[in-house]
Length: 206
Image (cartoon, rainbow, N blue to C red; front, side, top):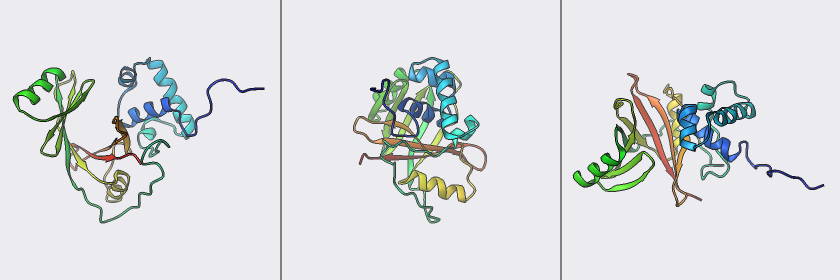
């Protein structure tokens, strides 16, 4: 008798579960994830519950620190040795909240003359002599700017800094995949005074 329904996925999570998991690891609420993925909150709750069960985790906090990598990622299967000599390379990005992304995009591009990299949704990116300016539209008062440090191997750097006593808010996770297959990865932590910092890494397709 022929099998019906969807074929089994060759990964620990389904593509939909991976999308939700990456959003959870990025710190988004169920409501924010539902809005971003254009599905209901109940659907997100269902996916989160399934993910926790599959991974043997007991809470959303544990999921934020789960360091899994999807099989389709360019990072899957790569080794990430802990290297005590690993260093932060450079400042790669600065984030700022704006009230109106379209107005801000026009002002930073046309008034300041910054090269516009790309915009998707309520996010806009500009180049500042090699440092990326990340603008995001939000209703809340502008939050403190976040410094993003560019690294070659985000998992190895995450491991090395953890050994040095840095407490990360979440595990390294993929936040975006460009049309050419290049992946954007991030992991967030706080400085000694509790202010936000982040690691960022671009991974080219294999």
